[in-house]
Length: 232
Image (cartoon, rainbow, N blue to C red):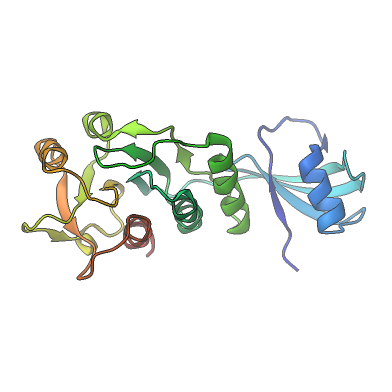
């Protein structure tokens, strides 16, 4: 049986830890774990603790740390900057899948054609945390607050910068940039980037790319891009 993994906001050097109420409830009441059973804890920054339950209290489960490890982050950095969507559940689906795939950064974009600008930060963070735990990773993607696409373009620090859009022009295949060490891709809203937004990106050395022969929904494009750039 796999050892379940849980998120801990911050670690201390103590050998005995008391889990918060939500985690305790999941450990004791949902998974029905008992004293002496093991679990893992991560802070989403590479630290991974293996612990043993010593008190199966449903609100204040206590564990003893038996091993501490640091999981080095892979050298590759993949940033997906993607427009917010009118249907928030579709954006949430993207967050979950992008986290499972292993992107290092997610930037919600505000574009001229973005239809919905409301962003429920705590809910979105919880989705990312849950996806990290489900996929048994020790690194949490950096999830930003929504940003204007112009500001993201202006401030990008990535060596390779890509933009996916639907305008007719010569584009490189995204496969050409597979497994680049440092790459960011821009994914536009349902109505695509405006010509002006595309021009601004191209002026800042963003390379236009194709994600395939068919036109994809925004969230699908984001997942396809993450797969193409991350997965070996």
